[in-house]
Amino acid sequence: MVNFKAQLANWKRPQVTRRSALFFLGYSLAFSTTLVSCGSPSTNSTQSSSTVPSASPTSSTSSNGKKLFRVVRSKQLTALAVLEKQGTLEKALEPLGYTVQWLEFAAGPQQLEAIKVGALDIASTAESPPVFAQASGTDLIYLATTPTNGKPVALLVPKDSRVQSIKDLKGKKIAFQKASIGHYLLVKALEREGLKLSDVESVFLTPPDANVAFSQGKVDGWFIWDPFVTRSEQSQVGRVLLDGENLRDTTNFYSTHRRFAQENPEAIKVFFQEIEKAEIWTRDHPKEVAQLLAPVTQLSPEVLEIMHDKYEYGLRPITPAIIAKQQEVADLWYSLKLVPVKVDVKKGFLTPEEYAQFTPQEVLARK
Image 1 (cartoon, rainbow, N blue to C red):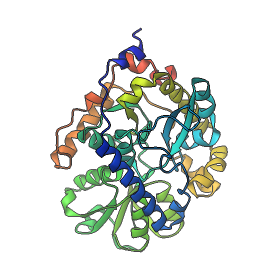
Image 2: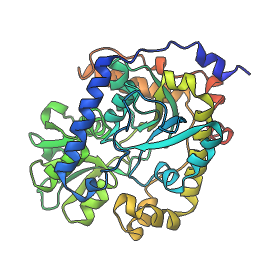
Image 3: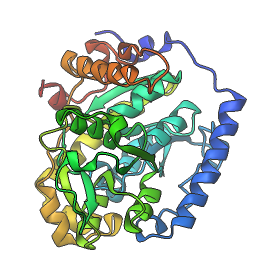
Image 4: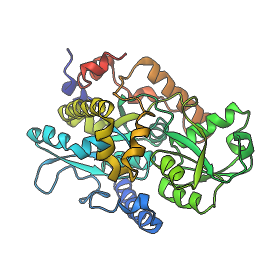
């Protein structure tokens, strides 16, 4: 079998520019300010030392001299959140000389900006952020994918809104994170009704800012994911106009920078072994998961147990069908003139032999 580490060593090493690093520093400060100013329950708990890297944006070594393995923090009902709470990744990577850091970002696009400048190592996003990242020149590697899980993503309208269908949203203000799953599904939902994105007024807001705008009645709709969806319903602020169960045709991705994959193949392999274990544990222990993640999601264990059934669990392998669908997503954004270049997503995918070097065998068997 081809040696994964040797192959990765042949990949081109990208440059992290001073301009990119300075941009990320500025973004990090702005993001931290946004979280403080929002003041909502969903964002107060984000103020921790791990929100922004403690060293320079391109630092890859901790203060104790160990290598850093920086993973995005999930505050959703996910195996990734379970993995952090259980602490098993830290134990698994310690023999390899790594210290794990969990870093928090507003959404997928912010994660991938951090990937670009070397301030995050493992991102977890929907289908669209990687396309926008590739269009911006990020040397991205798609590592693995997940089930579609469309039901936890929904278009909310105010509880007492007269809007009863997508067509009723024509000319109205819809909030969403640009280049997110909400952006993508809004396009798909409008197209299904013979409408275009230009038929609504797009309001680009990060989830924390959109949460405030929606609760204050400043927008007419909000395309967002759980736990925001369920919290909005529980608080009687919003109701679901439609969810992504029969709308979403894409998956989420774990991704990294080519440079990190090149230099840390064994750590990546360990990460996927541990995240797959967490996926299966999450699937099989709904009550325990609900107790574990209640503080993370700010929802009661009882509500989390109900939410558990919205999801499928277990990683999925990268297949030709996954790559083809991701190219369709890239072509859609290009056709809408929302990315400046036509993206060839295949540049971010590996060969089956390369994926086999770090993907658990039970995941590969799900093809």
